Image (cartoon, rainbow, N blue to C red; front, side):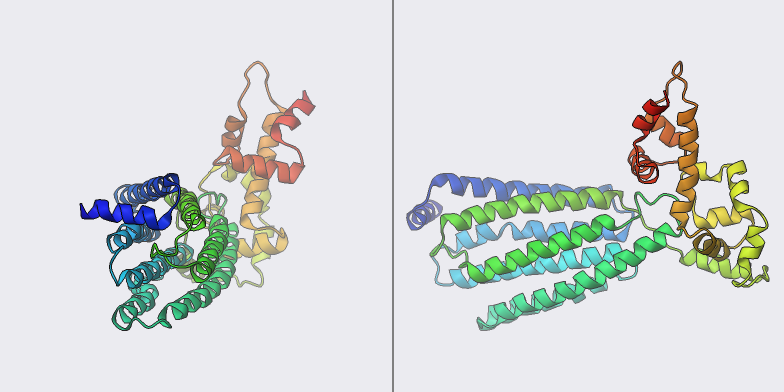
Length: 382
């Protein structure tokens, strides 16, 4: 009876179409269930890397946040309802700290241990405790400003770090499809803008104390659920396919090799230029190895990874990724030139036979180099 009474009071206060209430309940419930499913899947099937486990933690924190409506509703006719509402809003910023730590762990895998999660979350936890005890109205604005300053700093720092990381990948890998962080750069910007919008909403709109609630606030929260579903699904999809790559072990191996190879970095190109690296790669077709790395190719050529990297960067004016993909594109073009209509092959097969891990990468690379798609190139030759 008490719950029924609260529902009647709520409807009288709001004086709104019941449709928006039901829609918000459905949207928040669906979002909560989706976050729960993603969290379980990450812990059960996708826990190879630390950043995947960190995403599960962030999703768990976000899922708890969707119980806010129930908590506030339970305190509807209590004198401390506004106080509880502010605490629930402050918890949303606690969730922001979890996402911050996840994004940092993606860009810097295994560099920041779980103790750093406490570093990100402790300011928000302390702010919630202080507000719960003192009810000081200055705490909430300070938390909003703090979040804005920290997230802006992280935005700039992470974007610069992602750019540096991707340059490292291009210099060391022949295929970067599941290693590059370009998607996370867009994600960082998107999450930053979403968070900024949420901060503005918290400042401009009154709290969910059900005394000043309006139709626009209900619609705003429904849209917020939709945005949450979108970006969490995107993060989940990318994170489950993301892989780590580190050159630390290769650097150690290079140091061991350098003791046996007296060449200095100043004359590395003389040694490699005399061996006709391009010809040797074409003869052995090393580029057909979809897992080819700079270290693996250096070993196959009998040289040092650093020497080979300098040779490719300085002599060829290319990254390792561009250098290897040029061989693959030549192979693909050769297959297209000799295309047999009696025994046709799909473009996916040609991409695979050329050393590409996926057709999408092959298509982008082919169009970029030859300014024409593989299928159109084939038609022009027929």
